[in-house]
Amino acid sequence: MQGLAPSSKLSLTVVVVGLLLGMAGAAHGLTRVVSSSPDEPCMNMTLYYHDILYNGNNTANATTAAATKPTALATTYWKNSTYFGALMVFNDPMTVGKALPLAGEEPAARAQGFYFYDKQESLTSWFGFSIVFNSTAHKGTLNLVGADLMGDATRDFSVVGGTGDFFMARGVTTIRTDAIEGLYYFRLQMDIKLYECYL
Image (cartoon, rainbow, N blue to C red; front, top):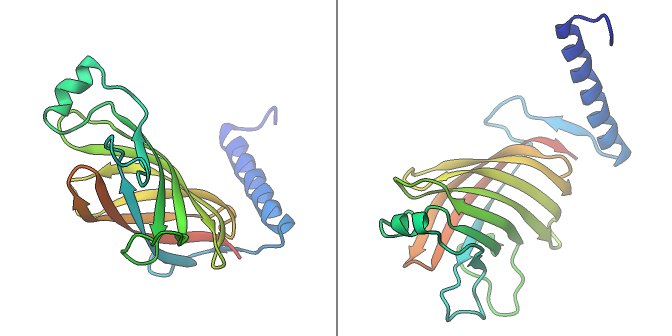
């Protein structure tokens, strides 16, 4: 690549990366589908994310726990309910309907990852997690990241990849707070729209 102009190097890099991604899909026997319209995703679904925070007494059914002890700075912001600096790790059930799975019943998927509260002035957090599917409907993962600006009615997370049925998926997940019960339970509605799929 010596002697090429910077724009030529970039163009060549983009072509090589595109070729490698296409070969990866072909190696799995899949065809790449890219949506040409935001109104027509190649795949979409709605799931409900159930977060049950550990409160010291609910070991049997808690799905989320604090992974950090509050620092002196953090505790000043916990008083105004922003929980600044707190890191939460979760393994939350995800369902097709709003109800939590009954005892012994498997959820549609599990959300596994973390979120941390990242703002001192208002209640916001940043998420990084995988939705892990292991059912007759789907097998594989979707990987999501994004800011949860809790004061907004809807927020978007980026779908940055996937495996199995969601091999190399890309898209957007729009979330809405669907229910809050005190400090220890909340439910999010997640409308997942994939705009790049391998089918």
